[in-house]
Every structure is written in structure tokens, then in C-alpha cells.
Amino acid sequence: MAADKLASQWRARLAYGYADAGLGHLEVPEVKAAYYAHTLRDLEAQSVDGGLEDLSPVEERAVLAWLQAVGLQEEPTEGQSWGGLPLRQAIDLVARRRGMTAQVLGRIAVALLPEVYSYLASPARRRRAREIVAETISSCGAKVVVAHSLGSVVAYEALHAHPDLGVEVLVTLGSPLGLPGAVFEMLEPAPDASQRGHRPAGVAHWVNIADAGDLVALPRRLGDRFPVDVHHETHMAALHFHTLDTYLGSGLTAAALAPHCTD
Image (cartoon, rainbow, N blue to C red; front, side, top):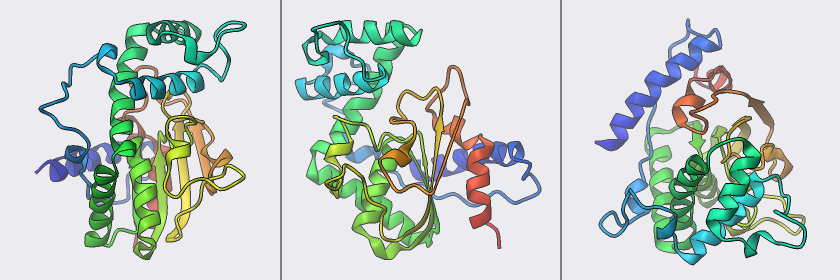
């Protein structure tokens, strides 16, 4: 079963984080994975080898919004807007500014934004993914929820929809929850009039961790848009940024979990 396999892999990786934090004497907690990837795309209709040319117009706009955030909110040239740039040109420009290749930045865009859009644009898929997360938390009585990347968006909405779940700590890793133009404005519940997100009612404590080089964790300080209790930011990986393995292997993640996972 995919969820069990992922849980085993993640627990093994978390052991590295415990060692990194000097907590190797503690038992690594059991891990239960909420697997919802199959609800987000029609695998027969969508190729995993798709490129920028396969993006829909709406997905292209989401990529441009992300590139604008990655590009430090600057306009590309005087008198020209991000929306007026061809997608490949925008990627080339931002890649040069970030000191990376356009191919790498393009692959991130193709891997990230269609999945995010698939979740946010479909009420049925959105509802099903949230229910899977809520059912997983409820079935094992989890008091600690670790949510990475798009998973932080799904978990955030699932915990809002089910305030009775009662979570001691929510740990968000590499979260795009505050990404303007592509995620933040589409959240349920919607941001308030002051453009602030809400804390799920059943969450007692919220820790956010961002790799300083993570191009998906935007804005870097999630507390600027949400009532996060603790924010950590550090350099974790030069190449494999944003991966869950990188975050789970960090001592920061272990330190956030350990106080809530010991008897």
C-alpha cells in the first residue's frame, strides 16, 4: 500500500533528523501517511513527462504568479509587466536572477503548479483530498501533523473543515500557503480583510520551517500572513531543496516534533 510504504520511508528519514538534533536517544515516533495523490490527476490523461507547452492557460498564469514571487516581486523591465511576458522568457529571466538554469526552474514549475491547480480548481478533488487527510488524522488519533508543500495547503483546509480533530502541533515544511496569485487568495477559508490567513481552530501550536533556498516556500516567513507561533529558516540543501526527505532529515523538524511525541 502506497501510504504504508511512504510512512516507512519517512520514519527512516526522520531518524536522521533526530540524530542531527542530538535526540538519537529518543525513539522516533510512528508515522502515518495520508495518501491523496491519486485524487489530484487523471493519470491516463496527464503525462508525467509533460513540459511547459502542456500547461493550460490558467496553469501558465499560476506559474507566472509563482515566478513573480521567486523573482523577488520585481517587474522584469521598465514598462513591462510579468503578465505580458511569454512563459519561457519569464523563466529564463528569473533563472538568471537566481543563478540557476532555466531547465531546472522549468521542471520545478511543471512539477508544482499543475498539481496545486488540480487541487485548488476542482471542488470534488479538493473535498476528497481533505477528507483523506482528516480521516487519517482521526483514525490514528494523531496529535502531531507534519505537512509538506501542497500537503500544507490540504492539511490547513482539512483542519479548518474538522476543528474537532484537536491537534497539538501543526508543523508545515516548505509551505506555499502564502504564495500570492496562485494559492493564498484561493484558500478555504479565505483570508480576512487585512489579508491574513486563519489558524485552524483545533490547532494548539503551529511551527513553520523553511529552507532558505526553497523556491516553493513563499513567502519565506509564513508568519507574515498566518498566525504561526514559531518560524525557523535555515540553509538545508543546495540541490535537493524542497524535498520532504531534506526537511525530515533536518534537526529543526525533529526538535519541533520531539516534545509532542514523548510519553
